[in-house]
Amino acid sequence: MRVVIAVFALLFSLVACAEGPAYKAGVHFEVLEQPVQTIDPQKIEVTEVFWYGCGHCFRFEPMLHQWSSKLSDDVVFRQSPAMWNGAMEVHARAFYSAQALKVLDKVHQPLFNALNIEGKRLVEEDELADFFAAQGIDRDTFLKAYKSFGVTGQVKQADARARAYKITGTPEVVVNGKYRVSARMAGGQAQMLKVADFLIQQERASKSL
Image (cartoon, rainbow, N blue to C red; front, top):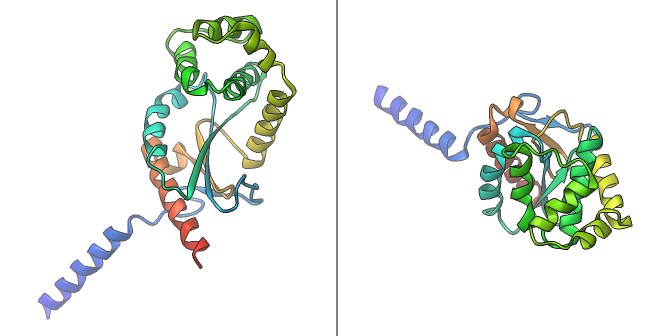
């Protein structure tokens, strides 16, 4: 009898390990009271809300980049800048300017480095124009994009999105406009990604019903 019980206990343990940990709403992640519309309803959207001047975001970036590069085709990943003050809005404009000029891959990490390693503030247009010029982007071309209607609109949308997500700090990850994951609740930055994986699986399962 004891052998049978031991076998069943072992099988239960193996099944639990295969399924992975069960993360709980209100403990490891927050469920948004009002879901936020995603860009493509056919995809599972994962959004990181970040700030270039955030040391936690700076340390999270390499881990996040590696994780996002391995996501399945049914998942779309994007980053959305947070902005609670004028400096953060300037950096959000830099992000969307780089995106508009199709040079985000070129300047994204250097922007993080400039604020977190080199101690630069980059809160003035001229400072940013000089920074982009140092990365090989024409100064006037950058300034035109920085002041453009399109970039202004994206900055406003990002601000509204962060408010709708009820962001309390950076970095935070939002899965499919429904679930907000923070390092505090998840238990660390690596755990944030594990919780995100769990929620992606949950959303994938609900779509297949």
